[in-house]
Image (cartoon, rainbow, N blue to C red):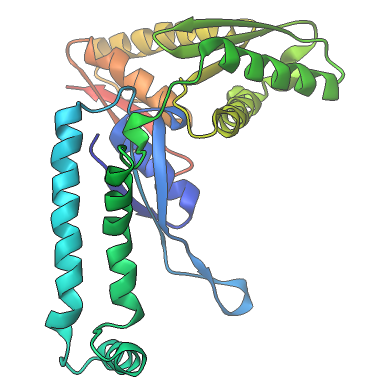
Length: 296
């Protein structure tokens, strides 16, 4: 999957911008925080947040692609071993320190501690080959059994409901490796919140709990719902968007929706693409981005 890189005033803002570019929800993306804003004098924020993100891969790459990637890594390792000798004598402070320390300790080594660090991955590959195996990569992770995933999610959500004093019945189904969890019970509106904010937070926590229990294994994506409210809300939103789009097309007016999450904005764009004569766009600054409909 291709990575996208975005910046923002905060890490969350940068993540939202990345989700807009990818067109997916937060649970379907992977993030790497490259840089965070720094707190300066009197609590003022300096710098920007910089993250990169991609759509979470659902299946491993072919073995041929992994072998080709390993060869590139080997070449990179050999180049890294030559790099300290090529940089020697260029007058930089780091080279001076590395060269003097290497001469003092071993007489013929260049680059000091840095050279030994670069050789370590190659040595690990040799050790693994001698043992008849290869280093374990993300693409080669074993899958976590679906029944085990369901047990982990059910146990956590039942404990969460008990903490709120709510008797919760957890219904879980699996399709194509992904889990759909529906909570049934009385008084569960507390777990929904305005615009599903609380429910989205619970879903994110469940994902982290499952990730921790997986212990390096591959696991599916998780969707948490309360008595089917997500499906009912999505159906109602689709009808509202269709009516607004018809008004834009017939009356040549502009319709501005309320502030929406990145997942809801993507759903609106998907609905509008099926309607002739209407165009949609996201406008505004995060976290207050809106979808605007205009006649195409």
